[in-house]
Every structure is written in C-alpha cells, then in structure tokens.
Image (cartoon, rainbow, N blue to C red; front, side, top):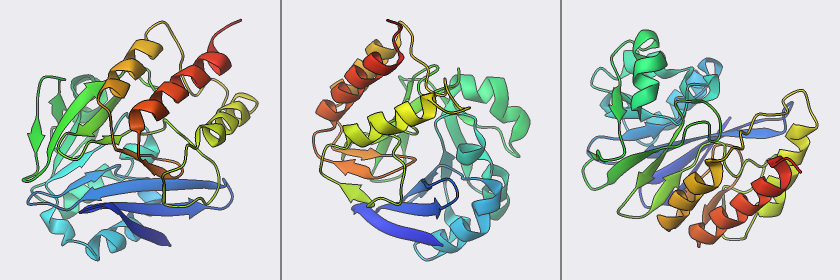
Length: 241
C-alpha cells in the first residue's frame, strides 16, 4: 500500500512501508508542466507506485525521473517508468550517466553538472555532486531552488513507520539508525571521509526549507540547522577516534 502526502504545494511523498525491514521507502512526485519523479523505486514496487502516481497525474506525462545514486531502491524501476512515459528523461549526476546509467537505461540520461539547471515549468532544479555521500561515486543531491526543497536520499535515514512530515528535529532518530546500521552486517553503508563535512556544509548553505528523505519523515523548517546537526552526528559516529 502506498501512502500519498502533499508535503509542499504540488510536491507529493509516495511512501511504501516494509514491516519486515521496519523501513519506509519514499518517492517524490513534483506536479508541474513536465512532472518529475525523484526515486524510481524498486522493480517490485513499480505497480504500487504507478497506481499512486496515476491518482495525481497521467503517468504517461512524466517528464523526468531522477535519483541520487545507482542503487536498486532509487533506480530499479527506471526502465518500467521509461516504457510507460515515452517522453520521460532520466536525470542524474554526470558521473552517474557515464559510469552506469547509459548502459542500464532504455534512454540516455541527462547527466547534470552543478552549473546546470533543469526546469519543469514553475520549478527550477540543480544537482549538487556529493561523491560517496551517502554512498557511491555517482551520488548527488537535487535541490529545487524556488521553494528550497533538498531531495536528500539516505541522509536523515530513520527506521519505523513514522509520520510523513515533521517540523521537529529528528537528528536523534537518525543517529539511532546510523548506530543500528553500524552494528549490523550493513556496517559502512554511510561513507565518512575528509570531504564529507565540506559537502554537508555546501548543502547547509542552500538553507533548505524542506528535506525530502528517502527513508523516514520528511522535514519542514530550518534545514540548514538540521544538516549542521547531521554533520556533527556523523563525525561522532564515523570518524576514527
């Protein structure tokens, strides 16, 4: 079952909760002249996501399908969307395009560099390269400039079937999730290196008002402070003593 929540005007969070993992998988639809879907989702979730998108737009009208990094929960269903939306264009970082996506995708991707903009009509997007943050050489964060939404992928990961949108600081829940992952066979899922804090600083300086999170609640409020809190937490957890 997909839960649909409008977390900002014409920005919809499409969430599927998987009890066995105690984890939400969130996808974001921007309804505009050329609609944009952020996170193509797992192949096995495509039918449910397609049905959810159909309640908001005609899926054939999708203009763009974007994601942060090449991973099944972000890109697994890409070709299903491209088959159903003949005008849809894959969108990712330039590294993602040349390293993985153009070999995988039914159509070549728009590989964005930080100096490029993408317009869906009323909304204007930029892709900030964040290599290995949260993970993957090709990783990047998409930012919608007019209403200051940061599509932040696995940053601010929280476990549980949590509320769609929060204005409360949930850094503690994110810290608990990072600690839990570090104590599991998935330890090391979040990279921390000499560039991590500087990349987070760049994202904080965007002063986002909405954080569109892949796993867990999205956030509305002072995104700059939230990212600074996350940076401090990551340093405490991942930086070698």
